[in-house]
Length: 534
Ligand SMILES: [Zn+2]
Image (tube, rainbow, N blue to C red):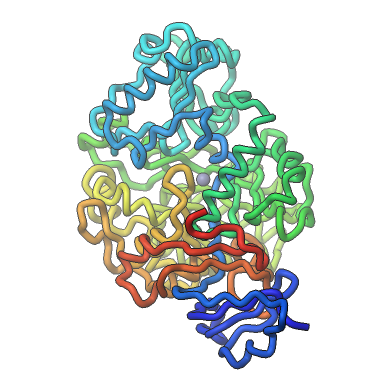
């Protein structure tokens, strides 16, 4: 039977047995042939759509650490995007806050993206300052990292937060010397408590559609949600006919430490694959768990880091052990956010013990971001079968601040050490942790291969990886981490025809130019879900 679709042009398969090809054929959503033009010719019949591409075909890109279900809300009209990529200037940020407070009135103003390290000159967002800007109505400003939020007195009242409110597990509300709330919330459970109920559920489907369009536009066909709240499950199920991106989700570990789902849930379009924990916080707010101190500089003073501080973890070793032991024996893999090297030591100890007690061959335990991970820790992780997803795009935005402002040359230049990770033999992925940085998988490939900071200097050239390796980390190896490499991640017979067409072969342009290649088309299971100009 002839194929439904044949694509001809330069094909990068990310399949070691046949790295490049000239054509591929698709039937029933799956790849049925890939190889030389002559190999595929026989699949062309009267009803076959034949597409000759000028650029280059790759497997659909995979975001191993995303937040699409949350970003759908954050980038919707209900919240204002004040991230440095949108508003680099501090005065514009403050003006946007004032204007949203005036526009929303009693409905409350919610803004995301506050970043004093990149938006120089932001005022200190004290409770007093917040209450002066919004004396009567709720105001919530989420830090660009997502790990902190600032809220005024009216918001505390709206959400029922008082001095007697206990801190959620692994998170906290800031308090003054007298124990009163100081208008700050740190870490997921506390930050999310300030956003509950901000959207009308009836508005959510349109928000999610817009988000999926944004993902397809940058060439993504699979995306993880690393902070999955099961309240979204029925909504996603209801929209599954419209899903143009495969979703792999990690449920947030809760105080109950149990999930209603089981590891065999879902299908190739939507599946919960694991459980997420935040071992520590964000480098940009001073709460990552380090073995060495932050520098004492203007930058660290701006973000309120005490001189000599090594940050801290969100959980004790005992608490982390309790969480991992609650989920892992039930068959769940875990993905642990961890930026500081002291935190890496703790979670690797906890992983190692769990693996000893409940040995499992294909566990795919993960570490997320791993800015300050050391070489010996990477080797230890690899020996345990643990893989890392690296947030290498941080170099593009914060590269200079990491070295000069926060951690110094010794620790800063090896930040996000992709080179060391790959050298162990580990299968790594790259990610954007959107909306922390925009969803830009092609830029991740550029940055992993160049490590160029905003000033133009190269941060830790020995940690660069090849373009081919970076492409793997944004396709097949990312799919591996999401338990999806059996059906996606490379262009091979039998896998879904999830594809992206780029304007040029990324191996044929200077690595720094890969970020700016055009996505000409995106296909999910052979169906075109994006075309440039849409
Ligand atoms: Zn994240």
